[in-house]
Image 1 (cartoon, rainbow, N blue to C red):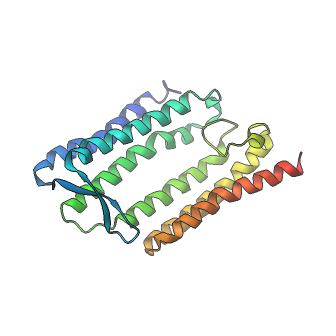
Image 2 (tube, one colour):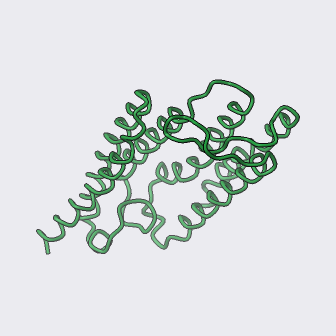
Image 3 (cartoon, helix red, strand yellow):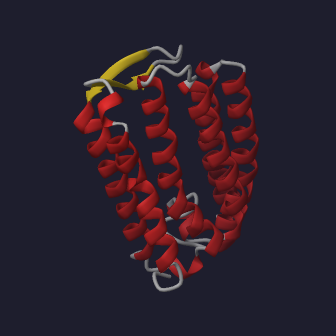
Length: 210
């Protein structure tokens, strides 16, 4: 898996850290305190120093990416993870880094940016992508709905992740709609249902086939 995706991983790491270079180019224009957290009304409610924003946030995201990649590659059943699903693992955080950092830079420079809408649309796209690839994986410990009854039953695994795929795609579309309509508060119950429904369905399947 590592050899096949070596260049994708290298490029993804570069992209994750690209905002550092952009931040250095904008250094003299950026304020000493930059808004890095926003509430559901798109109002900043958390600030970070310029140094931490430019260097620290991309570094934290890079660490998260490396942990995700290592966890996936160390999975003893990683051969059961589809190539496209692993591609999602590789690229989620780099794209997130670009989206988050460029939004922070833009807001700090005075551009009108609706952080909540951007984040919501991005989140919805992620769930749609995950929903498309969930049913394409065999049993593994990294990518999919993992619980004792799915890990011990291939049929339950396939059934659960097929249902989860539908839930994620539909939920992703609803999240995008909520973001565009500026109804961010609806995202939390949507996500809860997206996660809860597959687990309930999975448990019912387990009980009916026990």
